[in-house]
Image (cartoon, rainbow, N blue to C red; front, top):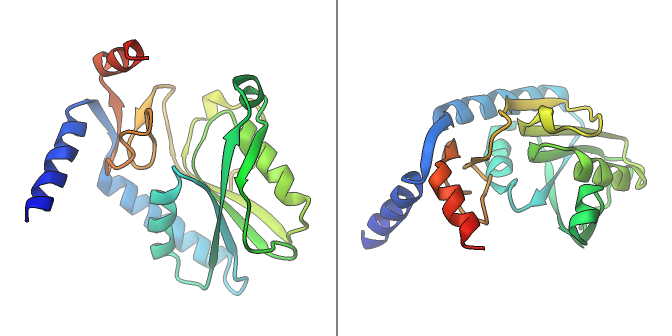
Length: 197
């Protein structure tokens, strides 16, 4: 019982830093159900492999899997940027590669958010060299105003504004991922965190 109270109070601490909720928990759940239904229809009989990049995609991918009604497999990549300059070019290094071979497989690349698209573009090129049958992209959140490269997104949950948002996997310095909604951080919190650098 004590642990429940501790978890609730910690979550309450996090919500105090939120200026405004943009997408509610219910809206997120309902949209994921719709996406799961669409994927189940589109990939019926294909046994797709869902690939996610750790860590932000964990929340979305876990909930999405529960809404897909066909057989699927899951694998993960983990990436790290070499430097700020390399990151700005979308060049990353694989910290964890896939465990499952993807040749002749239908791949659904699952993202929590797509913004500039540079890293995603780099990863998709890497995966295409492994000769899958198909690759499509599913993202819960899209920041299309930040896009620097053209990317085909087959499944999109929500368009995000050109603001700094947190929650449901989206973090600020590894905090706020566990909020069940997406919201804007208070300007005072952003300023405080920036001053703490």
